[in-house]
Image 1 (tube, helix red, strand yellow):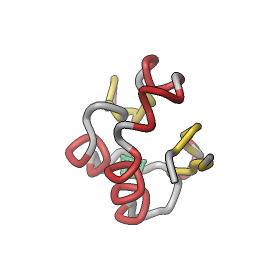
Image 2 (image 1 turned 135 degrees about the vertical axis):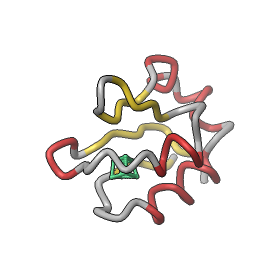
Image 3 (image 1 turned 90 degrees about the horizontal axis):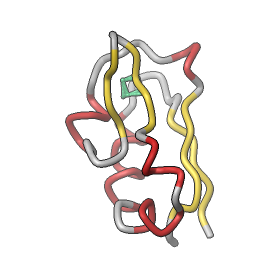
Image 4 (image 1 turned 120 degrees about the vertical axis):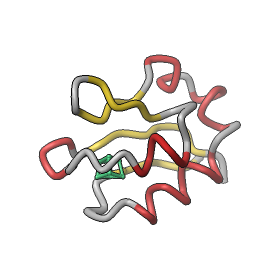
Length: 70
Ligand code: SF4
């Protein structure tokens, strides 16, 4: 299932950088905080990285990466 939306529960994020390492197309650490890249607000863009997003969401140590699937 393609991912259509991804977001972070930022208050829980510990800026470990694992998601940026695993899927730099979507996640970026900026000024010590993890952010979703602007282009990742486009479902067509996100769909290309669905498998990687699911992997990093599972690997996130505090489970703060959330997403919806089509
Ligand atoms: S893997 Fe999770 S805790 Fe680590 S930077 Fe990404 S969102 Fe934050």
